[in-house]
Image 1 (tube, rainbow, N blue to C red):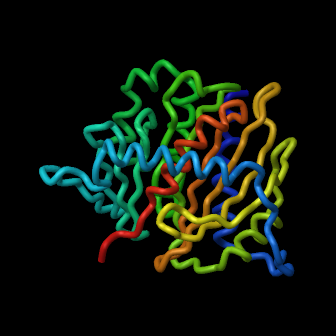
Image 2: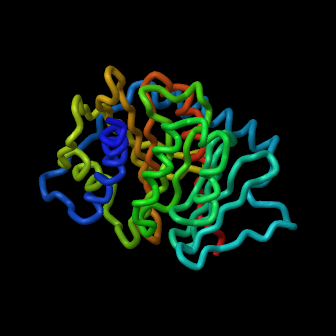
Length: 266
């Protein structure tokens, strides 16, 4: 049963990989479906992000820190003094910050294997299962996984997670991405497409936001939000999955990650 639930959770990310390899040719919709409450959530997240930026300082690590760039993925990961994590992806050409209380790992890198010895992983089977699931993912696409380690946010054996997905060289516009997502058949019980919207991050970057949900566990509902960034290198997607019961609390962290995503300085 646990293996089936884990597979179900992983398939949301895999559905995006399916979009990377095929674009539906159906006529695109002329307008997106508004997401209720998204503007309010974004405003609250922007306020929180501004407050944390003032406390934490620059988004770059201290001058004394020399992050190790992985020769395999061309990325680096730095845990800062405030326990937030700076992720830099030189292949995608971006950097972003993962909030404290989230365990950030790259597929099959040192921090991934060390994570299994942490008490917050050993004491939570859902976190351990989600972490184990990362190992089978393709690091060319799945650049980073971050798991919410707060026990109070785990329900129906689902630990909230954020995944950074990169489609190198894929420059489809948002209309085609939305059409592909709407056309892609999801094998999830109780699946619903909740809506989509075009938003702007705090620095003015235009993004596509998609919301979906499906059944999980005996009676729970899993909530999904995907944020699409169009970059010179391709398309980056921030992928959030969380039990719907804790959606509002976790979305504040997710919006903070979204607003922290910036291009690398040439």
